[in-house]
Image (tube, rainbow, N blue to C red; front, side, top):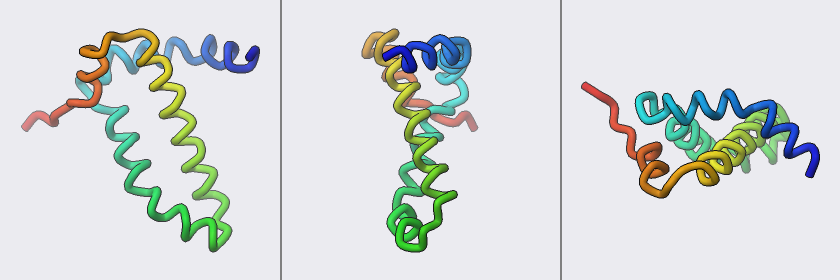
Length: 90
């Protein structure tokens, strides 16, 4: 759709920067880990009508989806794997 194309054009520089730096920083993996660790709280938040938490979780998931779309469309499987095998240096 036109909105998706506008979003991709507006975020391409951020995505390129992340693609370049992520193997060293592990930011994408960290975002996914934080999202997954917080998903257990989503049910409780929905029951308590904590709309702020639900909104934050929705935004995090949207960011993850957008980034993964860019990563998958522009990288080989081997390059993509590097972005999920970050190990913190001692």
